[in-house]
Amino acid sequence: MTKVIILNSSPRANGNTEILCRECADAIEKSGLEAEIISFRGKNIRSCIACNSCKKNPGKCAIDDDGLNEIIEKIKEAKGLIVASPVYFGTARGDLMSAIQRISMVSYGGDRFLSKMAGGPIAVGRRGGHTSTIQELLMFYFINDMIVAGSDYWNIAFGKAREEVTEDEEGIKTIRKFGENVAMIINSLSH
Ligand SMILES: Cc1cc2nc3c(=O)[nH]c(=O)nc-3n(C[C@H](O)[C@H](O)[C@H](O)COP(=O)(O)O)c2cc1C
Image (cartoon, helix red, strand yellow):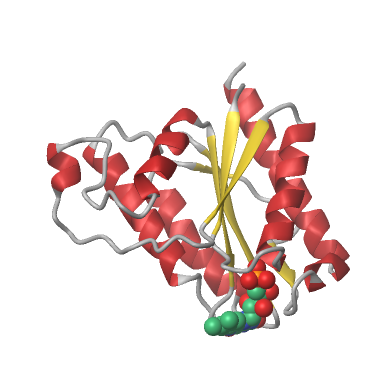
């Protein structure tokens, strides 16, 4: 079945990012696709070490002990990729940036598996920095020849304490519509 991978970079179990990822996954599945949420919780994803080994050994990162290569294998099998982050000081989490930089390098060094994948970013925070986080994450999509879906608003939601985002009805509606649009793009491209 055609799959969409959703990367949840929050370290908090049942946190706001996880809730939004579940809403997004549910909307994608209701559109007839499979969605798999991959959590970074408990992982210690490292930054690119600029060794360029992904050019010599295409399809794989030299850092092989933090779980990212397994995630890359799943992304290669999928048609969609969504990345979700809590806002930290007006930007995305560092480990998500490390992950997407390494995923980009591996894609560049090999068969460009990210090319024509559909998706986009999601950001959740207490009060500010959501749009700068979204903008930062969009750089990954646009340089990798990916197709970004929109929604009725930017893909952001508000909440601080665990589960607080459930009170942001507009945010949840926005994320569900974004998920539907990602699925619509994938369904249209496969016909
Ligand atoms: C280190 C740190 C920095 C944060 N910086 C911001 C910020 O710049 N803007 C904001 O609105 N919220 C900020 N927050 C709040 C989180 O984005 C918010 O609690 C979010 O819902 C956490 O998502 P989670 O429950 O999925 O972990 C910060 C939280 C932490 C721990």
